[in-house]
Length: 401
Ligand code: GAL
Image (cartoon, rainbow, N blue to C red; front, side, top):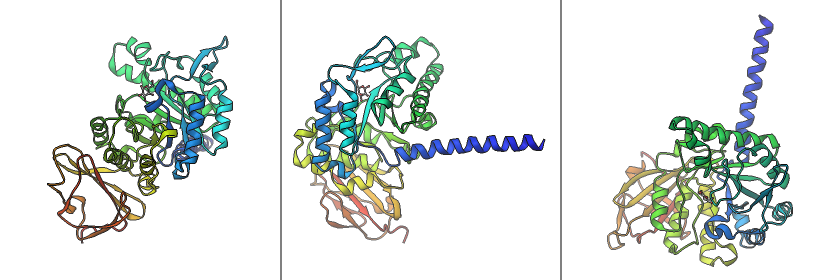
């Protein structure tokens, strides 16, 4: 009896230690939201070895690496054929993956790759179905540090063969669990980025299958309306994010399409409030200085990367003006006001209600886009142009005085 009890205790202790290791492991590889660059939003299927090396070079040359952008992520369209043993090879655009990862690592950066649980990726290239362990091993041998795993053809290939919707979801969850276990088995720390568009409230089960980040929505595009729908649609998901596991409202479009500077600033500010992964998706070798200034704003990045890891929340919205706050370490508070619509002009200032933020009295802070000291007072008029933002960090917010 006594022996059985001790054995049980040992088993429990070992299991708990395992659980703890898995958790601290997750927190260790994504203690703050991952930052870097991904090829998809700008280059899509035009990504190649040369472009990835150029992106790595530019992360260093522009100061983005110093600002925290570490991962250089190859998205879809790198995949070649499988050989007779089933081992995946890269296609002609990527002649030597090991040489490429060595190059990126030599810059002090990390490198990521893309696949999915189906037969094919979204762009129709070979994916990992039936080769999960083998692929994870190949990625680790090549030296990859990050995997974006995109559902895509797994939906028709596997899930839809099962008529029951709830069972389809279980099959999907098992597919992510399978790849997570395969990655762990390689012994190499590899960030698992889940891309299944938020299906079945992934934020509730993502951490249990080792997800370090999970897409909460369908694809972003470089248009303000899409960015606003996705960004403001994150309200309510804050409790699911934390060190090691983050909500991912998709990669950045800063510098892409026809976004105005105000829109780029607002997009970046909101993603920082959301503790979102910051994966730049623009053409780094041709980045304009004003875009670089946005992407490397250290104060805004510090909001995103705050050690507390507490995702921000919507404090209130009035018409199309959104007011969000994020609690930061040391008791500081970030306040983000975005004039999201096109109907309010700065001729009709918005009046900030501090009580709705739980604040009373004058709040001394820093405007993170002008770099200047500001004082926020109750009902103060804010002249925000359409799609522009005010982002303020208040070091010692006065609450309830
Ligand atoms: C989509 C995914 C995009 C990109 C693309 C590649 O499913 O959401 O971010 O990875 O596939 O084909």
